[in-house]
Length: 337
Image (tube, rainbow, N blue to C red; front, top):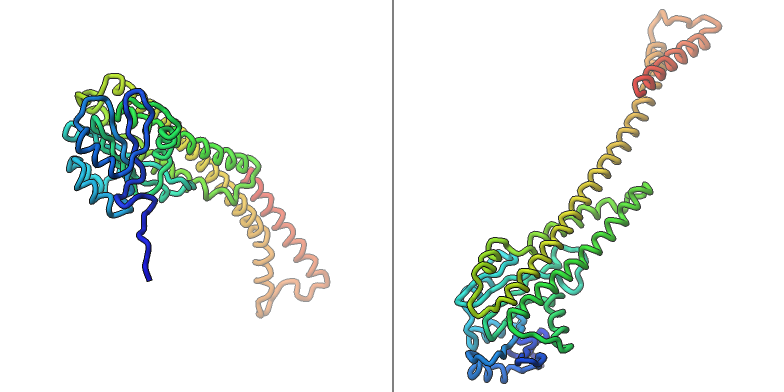
């Protein structure tokens, strides 16, 4: 029996897609053999053309191809295997390397639905690699396929960051809709099936904020001293994209605070219900206390039980029990008031 080679949505080199951008033209698809020819002959040219190569690291051939045919810095390969996954953009050998966290296509407010995209941006090449399909990078692919013009590899990176911010905005909007629904149930006093979802939603938002927010120190160093080949307009666009991120993260922080207030309101409501139930139980216990005490005293099998021979003894005892019960109830309700 022969088994077909697994492609993982990529070719034999692990390349998902490749695009060649020439001055004044939209990106055109390019296959692996043409990529090798371009890298050999035109990678160091100054004609304004550049490549974008997108790899699938789930295909083991991808990293091997990158080692053999690209001149990526060692820091890029170290990032592929390190434990830290925070979003950041850094200098590396006169280029830029970036770790960008994004959400999967079937994102369902689960912490496990967040994956990482690694990038290396040089003057004439941008290489991206991921293990799972991500929303932002596919938005960038759609923009290229629809003929949007890009003038530099840095502009591709900026567009990717803005696409990620747009995805994050959509997540925040869906989260706000969920919180509104839970708040409506809280006001209608029908919160039982919705109460546990707030904690899960808040945990996911905290994880998104921690992973998707770019590290400010590395980003500040990049914006202060960008590589010499990065145009001033691209630096300005990158700065604006980070400002958009800051706005989205601020909205996310406000949403987390709102969720926290709802949780506190729910906790107060639950405590109030528990206190009400405990009060009712206390009242029942207090009202039953006189009859239990008197019944226990009169039920002892000893001589000298009062009113045992009296013809109206039962009604006398009932009157005594009723009197003490009324007094106990009055004291209990007076204390509550």
